[in-house]
Length: 453
Image (cartoon, rainbow, N blue to C red; front, top):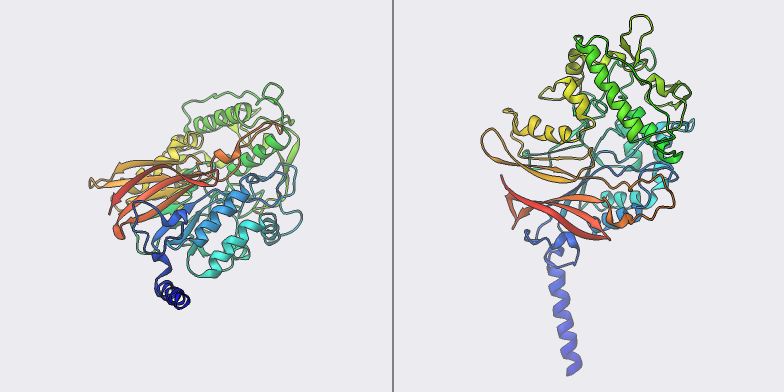
């Protein structure tokens, strides 16, 4: 009798679990237990950015965080309530490569992608598992560090991934509105950055058709600064130049550009190279030559004292910047000098969410998510109609860098941020937006806001 009783109970329990939707069962998955959500529907959007997955782990930006990233992505994959994962730019990275290294090693961009997948196999296995499961939509948006990757080559890494790219063959920028949410805009944010926006026609004599901006060379120097480190005191110093015609707007803009390079090279990414040595091995973005740091630094012309530059010399007029912004599909044009300075003072980039969307009368967007600046935050705004709006930056998953390879750094407490967008109690018009850190492999809430659409 007792045996029959237990058999009956087991049968009933099996029928109950078979009849239930998996989302109705508490899986213990942290994505399925958000307090603001009903946790009953597959209706959550997760946003990450700036993974910086390189092809060589001896210098890639993300190495220490790879296992945590893999763990996090497995949580996304096993969730019963996540409906979409958005990677908002800088997934691949052919910028952060030490100066003397041939990025593609004599091969093609497709070869580089395959090498990157192999170097980060665990991460790509989970991402491709998400695609293969067909339960969670995976969307990729290009960033500046992967602006040159064609859709076909991204598809080598992630076959079938949804790619959000702007119309008009602008494969290096994209804005994404998740299904059913035209009021949400997710993009990387680099199109507003003077150093990192697509740069058509900048160096036609050197690299016809190239779109690579000055920030590409900045990233190469930065990589060199950490793989072949020196001290600030022993580093090479930027030669002094002078602004001889302060009434000339183009000359003034070039001088501002010079002051930024001087600050960055002497205070942030200092190196010990002779600035005249050809150290930049390019071979990407239609560049084939080797270049010296002096090729990207402004100098005074020996004849008339004007400020000139070997590369990117023609970028420094408002008319050129306006045309470049339009090429990047920027809706509200910015002033050139504010944009140059704003490339270093990252709050300018983050503020573009307000400028381009909330204060733009032609926009109905109320929630904007950027990456790019690596500064995780949620900020509240109001649009011109007085409606509440939210800006979120999704931070980065790159390691904390150090020039001292023996330094003890608790990487498990640093960076690794992500964003969740979840309807409150299944109310699609009321969203809970959370900014989290994946600290010690746990979802640590930094801050959250609700937005009633």
